[in-house]
Image (cartoon, rainbow, N blue to C red; front, side, top):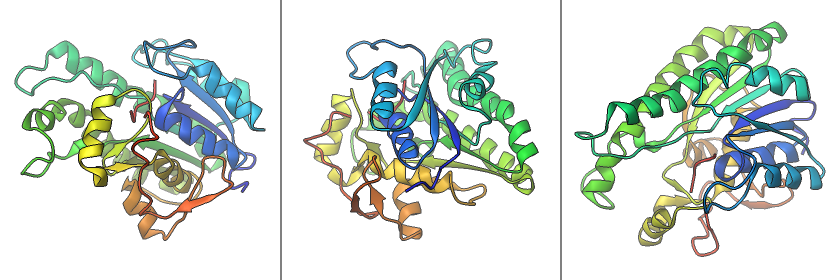
Length: 289
């Protein structure tokens, strides 16, 4: 416990899913956390709101604040790091988790769909990193973690699911591949300044709220699913230890580090890198909002 005592973290896409899990895990280790999402209230039929996420962390003894921001809007995100620092003090950790997909076959995905994904999935993380870096460099300490995706790579044949499912992820995966490349280059630029930049992706499917079709795939192929605690634990390692320019995958990272996986409150060891997902108990989707 207390691995992040005295640290502050901004986590985007944190009203639910991977972002919320990372925020809960960091708060359990003593970090003050700013949770960012595009709205306070409910998003369609998805469970969980930004207010509920912040209230849950504070009720558990942590310190959390809510920041509303449409990250796809250049002007709206221009002062997000400054807002987080005004609320919590100098930023120690930035986790760029928010992302979105406009699915379509590679032959048909439109310019508008592509532009929307690149703005949210690539340009927004770059802008937030550039906002956070000057003060991190001044203090010679900081961590920037960009959440990526296994969709960077074309699935191996024969496809585990349908050919269409393998094809429609191509444009989204391209945005994440670009994020990986940017992150590695940035990591080697700022490593000498004490700032650690890395990317982290789930091995495959993380079960988080709102995607029944994803759970259906996971039920057919249980080895393709992982619990959200896996990503939270890997994120904690990458935001508390000195790793530079890693394009990491959750299970592989934890296995290489011989790390245990804890519950999100940090109170219980759940297992190790082989920890299976609880398919029937989960109502999860992998993205934050």
